[in-house]
Length: 551
Image (cartoon, rainbow, N blue to C red; front, side):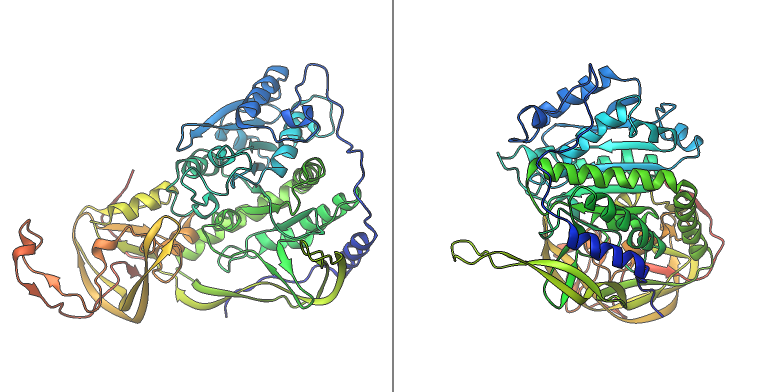
């Protein structure tokens, strides 16, 4: 049976949410920010009355001034963008740590708060910058959280897109969507984030702030929505974290609900692909949370984001043992599934409605220039199209085997810190292999011809593997991600992203003769013999191998 998500929230929580949503009135004109302590800076947006966003260099001036005003913060750079802009990160904790080992030794949750991966989506970034000041200011109720949690803040993931124009642009300097690069890791900014923040600090929770979603909500949210991450990583969001955000925002007249939008029959949510930040974090066995700001109203939008980020920190501190235990269990379960091996890998999926009906608000009318009035409509008993359901599953192997030529594919795996080994002696192994029925190509971001393989049948065969062949065991903390990247039918595998083009045989194509010699193109073409096989094999049983770790 495929694993599916999710179970309904408690009825009381839904009743309270509906009441708060209906009673929420207009946003207060006066935003209740905490007072700014003497010697502490304000953001450029605060200084201009939130008429303009804080620019990249203004942000750096603010962060340096903040560091100079407090002993509760460290400030650094985790990488550079394509255009050479520095990517800032700040560490907040008490005692103040300087590296991941120190943070892990404290035995406390580690939370990463991020924003602005899409260059033109800036609203929540302003609230996050203000929250950084409150974290750094001794004596504030926000600062007191640092006795219970380590907070890493990366307030601007895409400064190149931010600075591309007055309004910014969604993608990076080349127009590529960085929130679709978490598997490829081709952009230097996202690659640096994964290598130097996510892989190093191994956060229990990662929160990512965007602009999008649907009014009349001030904030939309979503957690991992793929079948393969551990279900409970999403359930803790649906049942506990999101209701806490709903209550906090409603206390100041704001509304919150799921990303992305709906009509009178159903509410649709965001995508399930592993390449999306919140889903990627789920594949890493952590809680990945998406925040979206449906409005670009600067101060009220910044305040909604501030409250939501703060609520996550408060929830984590109040439930520290449970959050850490949940993440530890996801990591242990991942290793155990690979060691068996046991279970299946979802290679294709879709959304189905949750088992419970939901109530929400939608905006109708108000079309530009058509003279119609905009109305807020209460929808009751509708479908929430959020439950991930596997439509094709494949057995999880003990290890995947890649040709020794697949250097680019292994480099992609290693960028995630996935454990890879190489044979140091030849081996003859019984393996499962997929036959190839068809190979097609499609445009995908900066890949003009991403490769899709239509798999035929699965064959068990005895195969000789030479010295240097790559072995990727699934019994490792990143085993869920490794399996997703090595199953050829997913939409984020190493073949799809063109790292193995030279090794994939194409039906109907004749192989050149010459044995791979420089003059092979002068040799007569030869037909393929035998079945066409996907050049990634599956070793289904634990097997002793003479291999060494790839560093």
